[in-house]
Image (cartoon, rainbow, N blue to C red; front, side):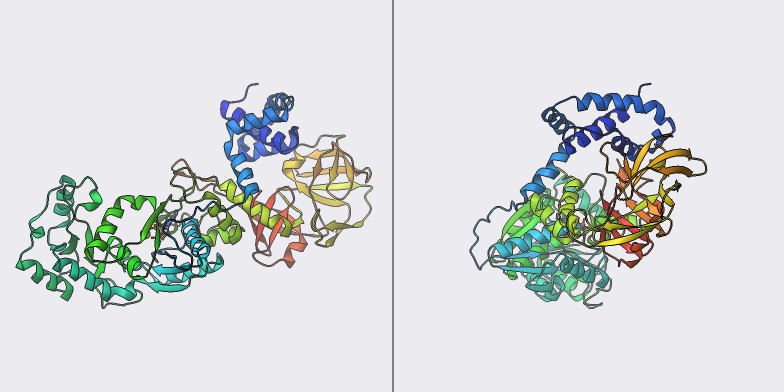
Amino acid sequence: MDIDEDTQKLAENIILRNAVDYNGRARLDSVISKILGSRPQIKSNIKDVIPKIKEILEQINSLSIERQRELLLQKCPSYFDAKKVVEKNESVLPPLINANIGKVVTRFPPEPNGYPHIGHAKAAVIDEEYAKMYSGKLILRFDDTNPLNEKIEYYDAILEGLSWLNIKPDIIKNTSDDINLLHYYGRKLINKGSAYICLCDQTTIHDLRSKGIPCQCRIHTDKTLENSDKIFNGYYHKNEAIIRFKGKMDSDNTAMRDPTLFRIIENTHPKLGDKIFLWPTYDFAAPIEDSLDGVTHAFRTKEYELRNELYRQILTILDLRIPEVIEFSRLEFEGLPVSKRKLKPLIEEKLVEGWADPRLPTLMGLKRRGFTPDAIRRFVLSLGITLSETKPSIEVLEAFNRKIIDSKSKRLLFIDEPFKLTIKNANRKKVLFKNHPSIEMGSREIDVNNVVFISSKDAEKLKNGMEIRLIELYNIKVSTIDMAKKEGLVEYTDDILKENIQKIQWVSELDMVKYTILKPNKLFIGDKLNPNSLEVLEGFAESYVNTLSKGTMVQFIRVGFCCIEDTKSAILTHK
Ligand code: ATP
Ligand code: MG
């Protein structure tokens, strides 16, 4: 029977990876379990599919490893990106222009309107690395000039996230601390004739802006200063008046078509309460704050590019020093929203558990899932400060993380969909199980009698008469397998280590607890929410898991690296 094109492609990719990972020889059993992992629906007609997979496997195994690499590079370049980047492991931050040792000042300016995510980590790490590179200073500045969205909870979450990332700002401040100063410069711009109070309604403003036509309010008269007093004194309410920059209404750069500098927001501000109602926009606050704070190099994501002209003009008119503005690309992933704007609705509509959901790229989510701050730092540095829009593969982050946690994670046993094996002729024994195969991490004893549980996925592949090895235990020969009852009978054969015999993991009936592993998958497929974004693997783990505290990293053999949640569950970090 033929298999559909998608499955064929998937099989080819998996087989090629497996072959390249294992010296040019892919193994049928591991390949099939991987294919079934991605396409569980094939299970029902697996018998028909296997011969075809075997055929592809034999064909790929017959190629030289060089050829296999070549093909894999064509089909799945991200595989090599991950390996290469991790092996190189070097920061690719280029030197800054106009930078002097001891004089560089950078700033990270988050708005406290949500929890920090990996995009913030990118910006904050770059800001911090450059400050370090030039023995300069890093400022953390909460850009809190929109009381509609900002909350103390978010200021705290950002502080906590940065501290987790081991980023220590030299100065911490709020833009709102300088609100009087910002008002002062606002008035100054009006007095200089470079800004005005606009009383038009929003539709008119929008309409004229898109047509590139100025409105009457723009003309400087005695009324301008009178209205200026009025807006600063609280005469106007929400949407009745704004302060606009006098740019160029027919500029090709739409950001210069008299953008808003101040608007009225009558909400309670988390730091200043109700006393302020006239709030500067980011366009106005950012250049002034950067300049007055002594920032020498201001990094922004690329979407602000058009706003650089405005940034410089405001400072020029006000006779303020102009920092270097440097852009880098926004960090985004395939199938995983990063920005707060996209994350917030998921949380509000309860489509995910909250900001710490392990499927999310928030710092809390990544931490809970088992990513280390060091891996995040190395990952964002490996991206450099390019402007390219390509979305990096999350596998690169995983590869950095694996390298860090591998030597710290104990190897433990877990099986899902338990299948009971009764072993004939087995003596009760205590198995000494090494906590790590190559690093000295001690060992533990597992008490085994004549009943063990294996995963049903492994049981499915067992045939009468087949010999397999229970990892670190002994070899057994299959007598009967009953998939419906989920139990089987096997016979102890010997202890000899044999090549070419399948090795499967197990847990002992005398030493196990019920256990759950949560497996986060991509949140979106295309633009649809993936219904399978959080898989739940229910099964048994060895009771040793009960001694582990939250946040401990382990590797469940043949499942992957996991971060312990509590005594009953863990979250799969990655393979
Ligand atoms: P969001 O859409 O998540 O609200 P934002 O840019 O409005 O993004 P801020 O809190 O204003 O979020 O951003 C603080 C800093 O972090 C800014 O310098 C911004 O450019 C940077 N930043 C935010 N998201 C990313 C990202 N995905 N990649 C790189 N830098 C980012
Ligand atoms: Mg923002």
